[in-house]
Amino acid sequence: MIKKVPAIIKVIRPLNFLIVIFSVLVSALICVKATYSMPVILAAAFSAAFAASAGNIINDIFDVEIDKWNRPNRPLPAKLLSIKNAKNLYVLFIAFSLVLAYIVNITAFVIALCANIILFFYSYRFKSVPLLSNFVVALMTGLAFLYGGIAVGNIGYSFIPAIFAFLINGMREIVKDMEDVTGDSLNKIYTFPQRKGYLASKYLILFMGVFLIAATIFPFIIKLYKIEYFVIIMVFVNPLIVFSIKKLFDDHSRNNLRKISFLLKLNMIFGLTAIYLGK
Image (cartoon, rainbow, N blue to C red; front, side):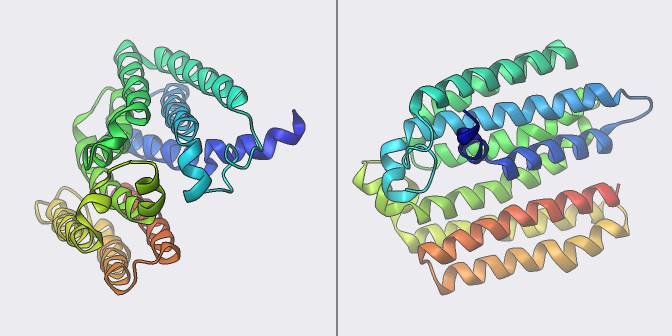
């Protein structure tokens, strides 16, 4: 079993796990009004992270044949981890997410239950529907921020970071679909890039990027966030969005698309930092 630990860590996607924890923590700290319980916030953060990892695991289980082409080094297609082991890990992570959510409050439990169900059906059915699959993943990412607000009983301030996360992850999901076009086509997975082509996908990402840049400036204009927010947004976040889109139009090779996907994920961290420091 010890030999399988690296494969288990890889299938969990530790960076994504940490990003979800960070997202819920930042959202909770942004939304908190007065007294709060850090153990409850941590329970919410880990509940969301376990649910997200469970979603990644079940996705890998359903995609094992596709990943033999798209991502042959992943633990399941590389046979570093068996399907049975992955299923057991999936059930365990679902249990962790629900128990921790129940510790937070009943609303968190209901949301965690619904999120786990949606993530299952995403892998089972939704991901074969163009754009719906991207929408579901982006929605789940944005939900992590609403979850942080629920943990401290003040969901209002979590909507802006949720919208930011929704948009930037929507862009990233389409980039990932562009990266996987060949493997998806072979396995009859009809994503937006597979149906409409690379150029239409690039313009869709461009449209979302322009809208996102405008959306990042709006909270400062209405004085919701301080100058620290504006500086980070204008120095890091928006230039990185522009740079990513430029790289996308210059080159849509798999290697370059992988780099763009990473840049968008990194930019989400910059955006959350801006919101937290500019509160």
